[in-house]
Image (cartoon, rainbow, N blue to C red; front, side):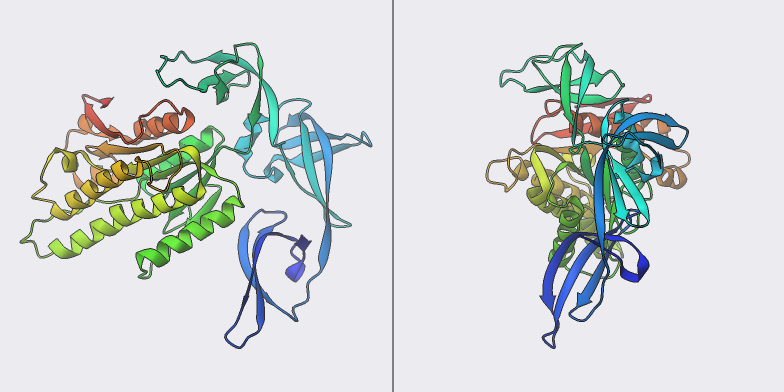
Length: 403
């Protein structure tokens, strides 16, 4: 349904019926602005007046692009229509999948304001240019990473050969990153967006590079309240679909031994930043991740090597994340067909670390782009990582090894 509150054409994404303490019926709507795509929430009562608008969808054929303008042809009237590429639904990165003569859908509000947006089809047939070599595994594989003629990488059924056609689902490229505004999270968001994935960021602020952001309130909340709210917001954004990857890269470093004045407060903060976020990511994966989708949690090398006397709370929190990875990877964890991994960096090459340790050996720090590429490869290829494995990332002389 489309309506016009305060003369702003708005599409209803989902709705929920409720009530107030006085017994008045209330309808809670999750909305999307029909032109800008900005999402919002609004409550309506019985006597609220709304103007319902007619939303029309017509099929067009893509002809060509001229700068920021796409030229489309009406399949029935053969009239040409021009649409700005910024009016493409979901993300401009989807333009990478656009091909001449592709059938697209144009949404219009009648009688005004006319064409609002356009979107690519849910599926489209592409020609395969090349396939990656893959070592066969005993359990067999169903898909292999390949490159389409337009240069996009995709998962290709292993019976398809170069030069043959394959149908690509254009709606499945979605991932969720917890910690999307941190240094590593920002690098991951940019890389996945480069490959035309839809990105949902979870953090204390909005990541402008992501398609959608779930903002975590900065006021105190219980783990249950925070996790339940975030999972519900993710469900609203996905609108019934499932994500292909959930990546938790939230966290932070805190030092201190048992005699430190900040020992207890730092330990509490470490648990919130590493354990709580990982638990919430696991809860999201249980409800919103596709079977065999990737769930990656962030641990740390020192916590795997033994005790951490100078950073007890931090080491304890990361050790708990390692245990969580092992538990989630087992049958009965609540995540169907689990593909759970842990990434254990030694030291990440972040602006914050460089500022705090300007005289350190940066050649032993792992670049953020290296971690982002690793996670992208795992998310893109079901056979690229082992379920339940804790992968250590060790960098020496600017060369990173993953074990």
